[in-house]
Image 1 (cartoon, rainbow, N blue to C red):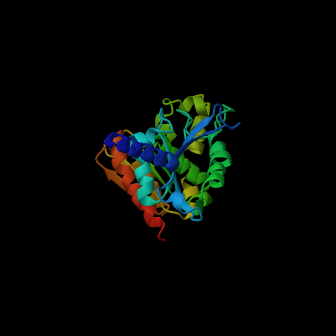
Image 2 (cartoon, rainbow, N blue to C red; image 1 turned 135 degrees about the horizontal axis):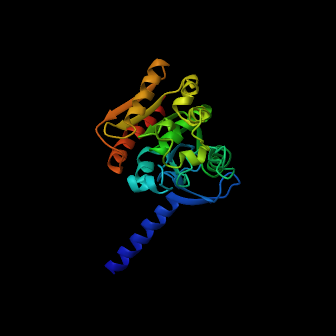
Image 3 (cartoon, helix red, strand yellow; image 1 turned 90 degrees about the vertical axis):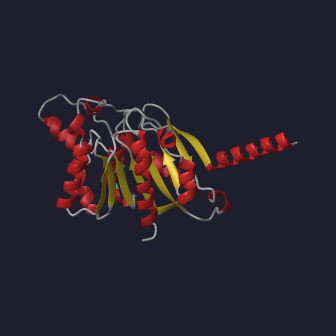
Length: 269
């Protein structure tokens, strides 16, 4: 009898977890293949269908996928603790979250704004005044880049170990391929156009606060320091966390805690 009770308890727990999180497959002409999106809702979500919930989009890094963030942290626990809907899309390994000027089936920025965000708004109880976005590495670039493109859609944005200047590694990580770089003079203009640092004045114009962090041993530490100086010179409201750490899961697991705390504080204002 005890074994049966234990089994029933496990089944109930599994079913509750299934309700709280769901994977969606989104097809779009903007991208080359269907995108898997993992959505986590807080445990109170199912009990209050009238309430609208804040949303946080988590973007993964280069070579990652939609479950990278859940591998780093327990997304369901964060959703339950903070009362956020957490959305983890698949950045298709190396899309850099941009509209590629040379790959017609890699228009990820359009996919995000025209397909993904409307889908989430239509299928979940979203508080549109409290939408946040952050990410790690390639995803840190993507989060702040999206924010620079459409700041009115987000309350705040963040980045962890972000590749905030694509020129820093333009010959690596498929950047050259996705931007159609030819190693000529106009490459600098293209790299600036798609980099966070190249769009920093748009972030300044939003008059909204951002948060970004990077470990002192991270290969992208220097460009994050450059971003901090740019924020200072343009008087952008920004929280910059510089602390020991490198480009790995251990650092990201620690850093995401501060970002959730930051976003949660913004709900109270």
